[in-house]
Image 1 (cartoon, helix red, strand yellow):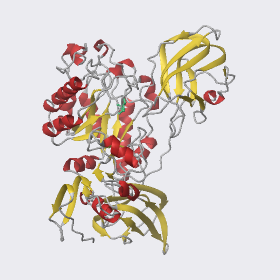
Image 2: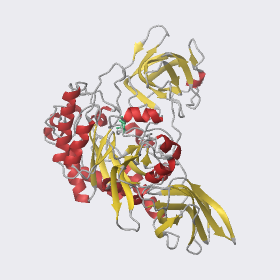
Image 3: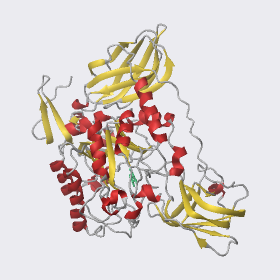
Image 4: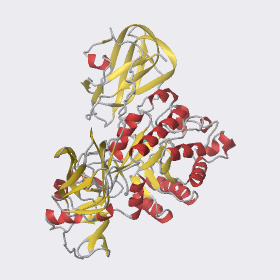
Amino acid sequence: MMKKTLFAWILGTALVACTSQPQETFYEKYVIFPADASLEQKVEMASRLVPTIQQLEWQQMEFTAFLHFGMNTFTGNEWGDGKDSPELFNPSELDCEQWVKALKDGGFKMALITAKHHDGFCLWPTSTTDYSVKNSPWKDGKGDVVRELRDACEKYGMKFGVYLSPWDRNAECYGDSPAYNEFFIKQLTELLSNYGEVHEVWFDGANGEGPNGKKQIYDWEAILKTIRTLQPKAVTAIMGDDVRWVGNEGGLGRETEWSATALTPGSYTHSAASNEALGIKPKAKDLGSRELIAKASQLYWYPSEVDVSIRPGWFYHSDQDERVRSLANLVNIYYQSVGCNSVLLLNIPPDKRGLIHEVDVQRIKELSDYIGKTFANNLVANGEGLWQAQIGDSKEYEVKPGSLVNTFLIQEDITKGQRVEDFLVEVYSNGAWQYATEGTTIGYKRLLRFSDCTPEKIRVTIRSARGVANITNVGLYYAEPLEDKHAKVKLSDVSVEGWKAIGMDAAAAIDGDRVTAWTAEGLTPLVIDMGKEEAVAGFCYAPVAGEDLSGTIYKYNFYISTDGQNWTKCNTNGEFSNIMHNPIPYFVRFGKTYNARYFKFEPISEINAASKTSVGDIGILLK
Ligand code: FUL
């Protein structure tokens, strides 16, 4: 065991643990390296960076639920513009107990509601704006969704969290920084004072204002202080400084996922400068390697949260009832989130009735049954108990005789820091050791799948670590194979055969396959001749598949024509609201049909205001 004593020159919150001899120094939440620290010293200090008690308890929940509900549920949008009438908000059978019961049966530990999304509409009767349930027909304006959810959580023993969007498209004061900060803190204060205990406060970083839009400078210091004062047990997520966005909305954790990261939370004033200096952002592949530590002057305990929706959109849309994620898909997400040192925040959006849809209720129950069954019995004897492993140490575990296995579980005691960098798992049968699987980071929990086998023993080797690794749990399980019955998404109701792009070669945009993309310099309109007239009810824009999203369009106009000369602008909201973070095919419906042989897709702005257009595929909808 490394026995280094660390001195008072260390800044940050240093704790001394009295449980083991010699005393070890730990750094809670962050550690600042001395200017002249060597890499070896820095890595040693990194190994002693630990979570706060709030962060630890949050991590132990593993499985949490997001509830996107609000004005968008009724308008069909993903981002409202803040102009929709409160009259539209009118759930016919809202029943938060139904939500919480379904979540409880689904194994979730916390329910986190969009108290206010980007449209500014508040689900509680706030005193800060008229744009709330107070002016809706629901319960004659006497209702309070936040209260009903809170009460249901209380009744069923579920933790409770709130999402309050910093970006507000309704508030007139948005962009007048001091005025909006005051308004926002008042909203936060209402939510954190009147609804009992809150365990997570979620501040979305999304902002679609663009370069010419309103510019708001948030007073994060005052905002975070409000939370620490009013709800000391709450973690603050995304723009907060306790919980980090994993970097995508597709349910994908990293293979190497450090909770001790060099990424400075966005709410700190020096965040942009220090992240730029290190060349990292929340989406970066590497946030905690030794190479990064060598360059970093400070590390944060900033663990990953995987937020992903059970449906293509974050809000409920009835036309997505058949596109609820399959069990196999959700199980993969489980392995890539909880199984990759992250907390899963799975969104299950209540519908227009104010109920969680039957399909979703069934799917989350299937998921919880599957996970429950898979991990019910550890097939390793004596997997629990502390194993303090030096680099290169191996440990053998007996497997219960005759057990068929294909899933490996391992956990570190993160109250002593996250330390393992590389490990190997081998299985023993017929007198020989064989490779089963291997991994890099472990952290709170790591799950790995491998081929079915019936070993007598397994051997775990810690090939590389930052000091002594504290392994608390090793497990082997059998997970039943699942077939992914998810139907391939159809991008066009009209056959694309015979379609022609006018004036350019854009075949890749109309070949029914989003993997092949058409790209063009500038914001270039795409004009298509379908060869014959169709009753056009909408269109589908699929952004390019893959990591390079450049050219993906955010704002657009869409036109149709019968002769290719005279154009009619179709009824749309003109934006693919959340496409930057959730680059899935967008299905836009006009609410009426237009007879047309030609259509024109006119880009107005690109997701990063670049001068480029890309289309993975474009299709036409007939209903
Ligand atoms: C994003 C938002 O823009 C989406 O609408 C959704 O709320 C998601 C969880 O975060 O940034």
